[in-house]
Length: 382
Picture 1: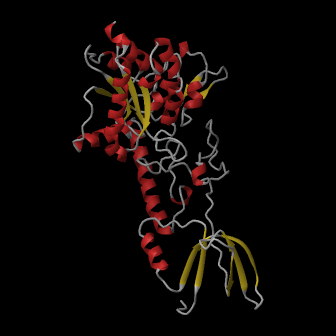
Picture 2: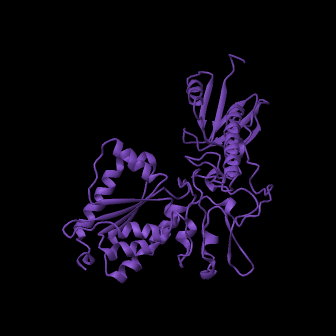
Picture 3: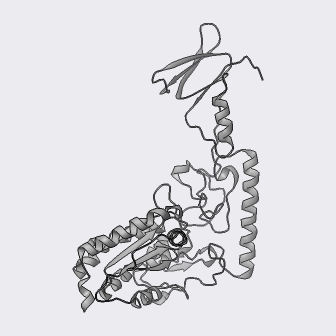
């Protein structure tokens, strides 16, 4: 408003999503604005009666002191969900919405392919509950979350899955008569869909279930299954793979959310893979059961590759921790291979995102070459 004024902006982080990047560049080129990254360590009265601002860790590499007529403090955004169980939900993970440390308390709803989803089925986050944003973005965000809620109500009315397989009519069907109350399924379910009774026997809350199959992979007794997805179904697919005596055969279990679409994109773009690989899609690598790896090697398959989403702080798994759980179970594969007297390098887990498809041929072919270097599976001739 005052063309003769000089503004100093000291910031820790500068985030300018979308079109705001252009506004940021315009401000950088404005001779009346000076931007510098730094930490403000003090505000005091200057000798001439104005305000003195002291900052450290700036781009200049030294402490600076600025005399100003006016100091404006930027207001930070603190999510209302932070340490506030206002929803009072009865879940194992607590009464509120789970959050990510990476997002400093904002609701864990930044899924790449399923925006607005939270780890509470039917509860959608939008606006500054989900991430910092301005009013215009919050309005658009609210509209998107409202459409997701409408979709949820429609799916419930039709009796189909809310997330993510809208066409799926199946639910976990455990044989609880064989349950040992080990609590692995209740503890590993990422959505709190499984509670326990007073004896420790799991109680399945089907309205919270998202059909990821994590409980199926967690159960050591293999008593959890779906009508169209079970340990026996995947095991039968593996046993049906043709194993030529003179050729190598590699099994690849691929997550259908990121890895399998990446493979489809790879094929559409005419990338070539070693013909010895056979792919079996999985709902999520969280459903991985180690008996499949044992069955594969017992049948004579030379190597097993697991393709899953990226996990860690900035995870991309649509089921929160499926790939991470697969990696944990994968750490125990060595015991299985030792019993079969096979090399540990015959099994590998690779984390991929959908846009990693150009890298996949090199990743997969490199693993195949490694297996060929080790040699054929000694069980092939049995």
